[in-house]
Image 1 (cartoon, rainbow, N blue to C red):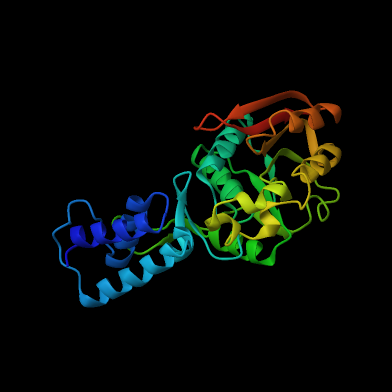
Image 2 (cartoon, helix red, strand yellow):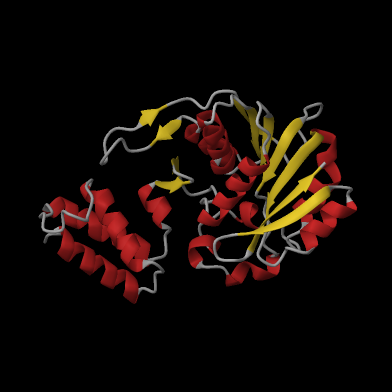
Length: 292
């Protein structure tokens, strides 16, 4: 079987299993197994061992195991990140949170905080893009999950995953960034930041059963829902953030598509100004910024 035949077989199996983006996922799994690009190499033959591994991975995806967990990595904001069970998979919608943080960050060295960091994708991407622009920011990434903290530390060491076409990874330490176990601001007494970013758990418990199986059955529940109305973390952030945010500093928060009124109201009531809601590429409310 050559790569073209294998990809068609895989896409058909995933389509029948009801997997979203079945063609993309079949291609990604094929490239992962064969360690080469599919496009331009479709007539290349597969070894029997590659065929067996490909079918085994397709079987996992048919069971709705997330592609990112099967492969163990993904690209986010132009940077590679390791992924694994027990830690929230980064969503591409969250890239607009990083971009908004970059938009409001001043043109000088700053200190930033990434609350509920998970894999570290927001804080690490922000630091790296700022570093490329010449700013040696300092930062803190926090989470209460030991699995998330471990993965964030791991992801801090990756500058790019594959050098060229599936070569060896190149590691560069993400300097000046700490990873701290903390329930929001709990372990940060006395610290102050120019910018606070967060993608907290915001799914209402009543909506959990309606999530896609890749999310509901594989992302940690702790990172998805507050077991309430989805606003608990925003209430705490609104009430506590001023203690940790420097004057003229900004909050940048990811929100659910239906929270574009509730979260800004909480922030305005807490005394924040310049409260704005930004949309993601799908046109849904996704980011709230607020100024102290």
